[in-house]
Amino acid sequence: MPIGQQIAVNRTAHSVVELHEDSNGEYYAVITPQEGLKLIRGEYLPLGNRLQFPNKWDKGEAAEYLIQHKIKEQEAIVARASEELSKLQKCLIRTKETKY
Image 1 (cartoon, rainbow, N blue to C red):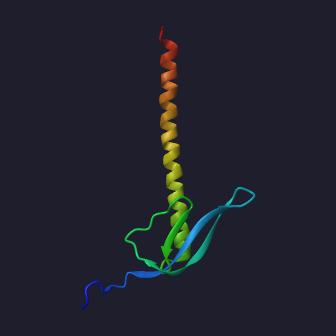
Image 2: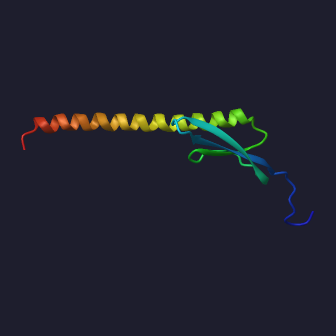
Image 3: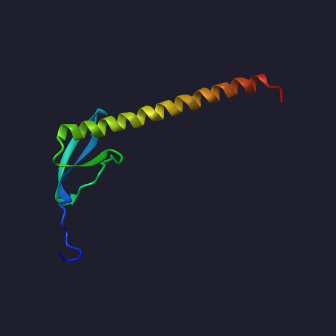
């Protein structure tokens, strides 16, 4: 076999699911097929409001994966903000009690 010849099938058709916001502030998913074959990756991670996925995935599952990922991100942000708020409130109480 010649050097550099591709022996594995490592490309497949892909689509992109994106979250858009309508005039009422509601999100909706739009799935767009991509042209050509793209490399198959071991892991597919959303980037912002967008996820590229292989067409062998169910389109509904791909949209759900993106939405669940976004929900987890927002929950983590809320948890960090809540922790920061609690720390700041305790600091304010201690500061009011301290005589400088």
